[in-house]
Length: 383
Image (cartoon, rainbow, N blue to C red; front, side, top):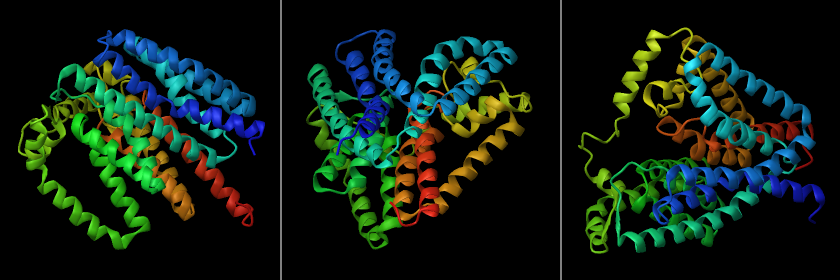
């Protein structure tokens, strides 16, 4: 029965998971409509503001103390960073106010305000089909516009927007959902970056290890066979004017640009960290030096907070993750695995936890799993 409270749960969940849809729409505006990137981003932010504002309002009504406390703490962190590291002010204004507070922090708080966790899973599952439909539309539109694909620049947005929905469809393990996940994986391989494809495969392996150990060897053999077929598949794609960056890099493992400049970036920022090991360089400090994020969550946290306090933050967060996973039942372990592989693992090689809404989603789900585990321990006879 769809009660008022359940309807609110659906509205909040839909607002949080709509980000994947908006990311692909932004890519459509830029790649097909040829809209200016800054304008496309502005439209995305505006379209995000409407559902997220409603979700934040509904969530704040439910859990006012949590919302006020969290936003006061987050705001003070940003202000303190500006005070101690004035050079970060421009980036905090540009990204912190547009993404960190409303999207990252907001996504976590919204999910924590949902009463029925099962509604979160259902909402993500059905939104994943919408993402699939829009992705196919974008895929066809860009192919028709360009007369083929030649992905040589490093563009992660499309593939990482598909990663969580793709994992959600796979996790359901229904015939239609598996076909949908397979279609998304094919699009990632054809026009996306290899990172999302690798993390999805790792998620499948981890899922098999947790739930279907007998299938690991057959899946490994099938996967190895598909890798052997890559050169032939690449030649086949050439007949349609499709040059896949992912397939090319998988076949040419000896290329010197496999890391896409990450190692040089890491070396530069490690030197900066050594020079500022105690204080760090503040939130968004890596942007001051690189003009982009540093593509590694561990390095980013150490740069933000310094070696000592940064390690405390990493160990504290890691300890919570381990504890939540260890005490969860099998169903919640599967939920944790899905969100961890699709939202946290990519942060070790791309994106930034300060601006990626997926980090907020994971924090929110981590809290939901912990709450559900505590509920099962105190009320073992109730679901």
